Image (tube, rainbow, N blue to C red; front, side):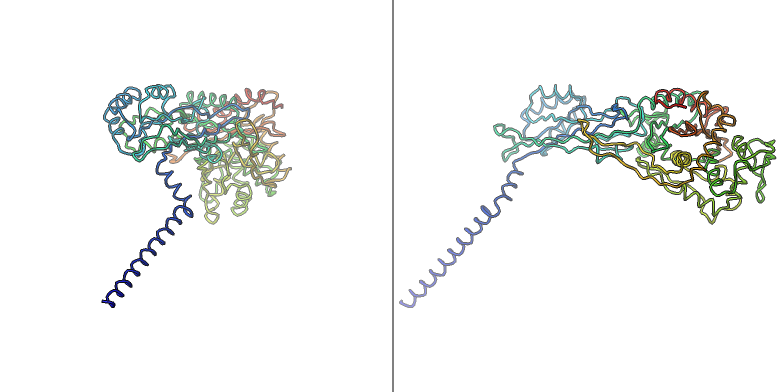
Length: 574
């Protein structure tokens, strides 16, 4: 018996010890959870009982150079429902059908969806949101939001771009400067019980949104509007496929206007600006049509520049010393290169002429001769030196690069055609930028729209800066090129751009698109003023004009008209 009692006593002590250890372990665990990890589990509990809704931040404005608002914000609402809080589902469904114009089937599906929060519709007019709020129905949430608003609708549409349903930039400056323009969203926090019902006595807490910064651009609304009117006029008169106009400061790269008609309505960017029937389009076909409509041909598309490119051949030839202003040439109307007879636009020829007269006449044989004197390797060197083999770095997405022969593939025939602007392709912005560097004294500038970033009170946040490169050409070559191009306008093929009392330099072009058999042309004119110290440089490109298609006849007068109207406004003399 004594042995048996001793055994049970030991057993009791062991069991008691186990329980003590368990209690100590539990106490330690509770101490760990309640003291050491209290913050973590407090946050978890808060998350479990908190429901949050975003408060959209106002997006920064896009302004022109004078502070005119080109892209603004419009107050709208987002309508949502919380299933666990709805007490009168039929009334909610009827209200949504009536106020939002959605079908009863859709409304019922959303209301009956068991989720923490179900979004019904975004970008609802504020007046409609206020009316929905006035019903006072449980479980219906009306949250403030912002929708992008473009007060001038089609103005500079292919530059500004637009935003999507989530207020993020999609194309144009809107996406390029997304980090500047976007704000920081706020939040509305509410506390709920275990069933997800809001505890009204605890109210709501808010984390206020932070609005985005404003982007001030070099665009001038008035210049843009006038250039757009001029582009629409010539497009209608010539039944052209489209017209692009670029006006920039050749001294610093600031762009005053960039028109690409037909433009599209920024407040309705998914409605095509053509007469195409979209009802039969597949989703992919419709998206392709939209992408084509949103493209900026000045920057996104390449073309054969034609005779405006003779400015580059001229600058290369003068820089290399293979030609000077008094060099004599003879044009019989063609030049034979290897086995090819390459014609001048004047089939009967220009006869004897010096280099300046050859430029005034836009004589192909003269420039072919200059190109052949340079040789493929040297000419390619100037392509690289002038920056033609690199993108300009303009602050818009999707810039296209130059399409050029490989150096080893440039034979005599290719060199001849390149010298007067055929058999390769560049963008209009590349041509304008390169010519700017030639006529401004030799400084390669970066074309751009963005100038500075400010807050809503006008305080400067950042002054935007861009790369420049000196020594593209010498000051002497720059002066000679300006002299020649002023002669082209005052006495030569560009005389339709001449304005009495002003010195204008420029070059016309008429290039044929591929395939050549379709007889479609691109007419263009590039001009700058004052010729002795250029303050503004512009290029007009008319795509597939009908009837008379020569650049000197239809593109040069467009630039003349624009300059006559905007130069006094800009205060540019001479």
